[in-house]
Length: 66
Image 1: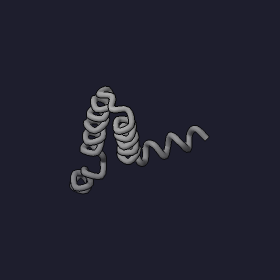
Image 2: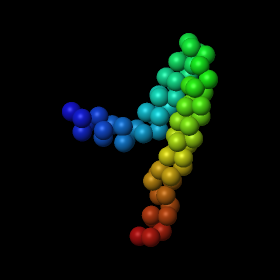
Image 3: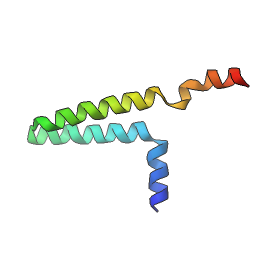
């Protein structure tokens, strides 16, 4: 069971991070705690960075090597 969950997280990593970010946004709106905004910024940076280094952007490079 845990393996299936981990495979899902790895496959849809960007969307999982976006869901976490949205959850933190809701928590911030409810509590107005400034800690959530800092964590939201960190999660956003991680999501953008992970999306930028995703293998789907390297398809042209892999095609040239073959």
